[in-house]
Length: 91
Image 1 (cartoon, rainbow, N blue to C red):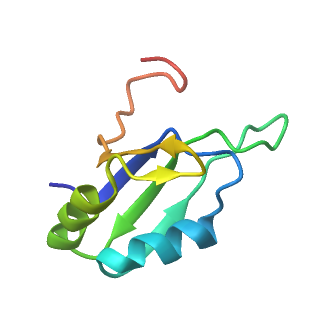
Image 2 (tube, helix red, strand yellow):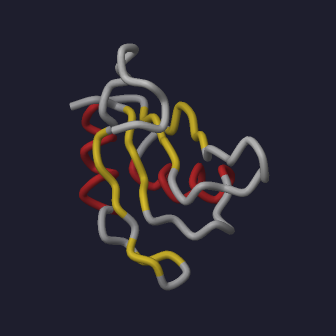
């Protein structure tokens, strides 16, 4: 399992500091990234959290997948590796 996690269905009000504090309950958080729209600057409703170890990442998935934040049930999964051949924004 990757130590980088994908968080989906986040409320737009959630910031990096909140996620850092929340996920530190499962272990050491290495980094938190909440992407924003280039044109509007609005948060996009998802984030990436990198945990220090695989065990901590697994603990975070178990603890927070399905967790409710501000009335929204969030999704926490291992992040898929980035692929260089796929154009951004296309699946």
